[in-house]
Image 1 (cartoon, rainbow, N blue to C red):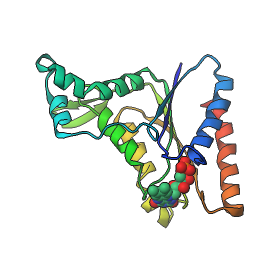
Image 2 (cartoon, protein in one colour; image 1 turned 60 degrees about the horizontal axis):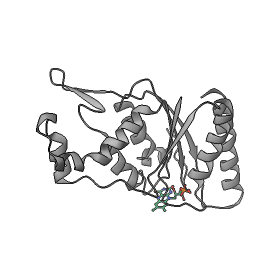
Image 3 (cartoon, helix red, strand yellow; image 1 turned 90 degrees about the horizontal axis):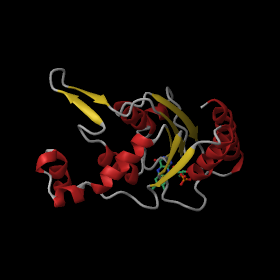
Length: 207
Ligand SMILES: Cc1cc2nc3c(=O)[nH]c(=O)nc-3n(C[C@H](O)[C@H](O)[C@H](O)COP(=O)(O)O)c2cc1C
């Protein structure tokens, strides 16, 4: 069993998503002592933004690949191999400007490749995700609260996007724990944090 931890907060110190994800993993590992653990820290080491040359390299059929095109795809190949090795994927994702951090978007641009992580069916004009048999957990910290169904919920372009993109990749089993009111201080922040931790500790038993 392989656990892939993906961190995307640019903060190392005082990061809520990092702290809660670590707490979850620590608890989860006590139920899965045999599990291997791999960290992909996008906040600390953001993947390169894709470029025109990268897109061209990605579209080059395998027999026509050169040393240059292969070199452009090395980082993407590494990230994809790591994802295929994982059985369980946990993502720490702060909301930045109503969406995901740019480093995480760069990550998805690197790993979503036709023929590698998704298949395209020309007859039906549909995509088929190839990362099947995996599950994911999203822990998203934010200053507001964006519960689905509330007016603020419509402003959350972070978690609905993540849920969609993970499904698109073939990961259908996606859990989500919101950590709202972060940075507000006081009772509200404390209560929201405690609620999220309690939910994560419960989830660690069954996930
Ligand atoms: C650049 C930036 C943009 C942010 N945008 C939002 C936002 O749109 N909505 C929100 O509720 N919180 C927003 N926040 C607050 C963070 O989501 C919140 O501080 C969260 O705890 C950050 O995660 P971290 O503690 O793991 O770093 C933003 C914070 C930063 C640094």
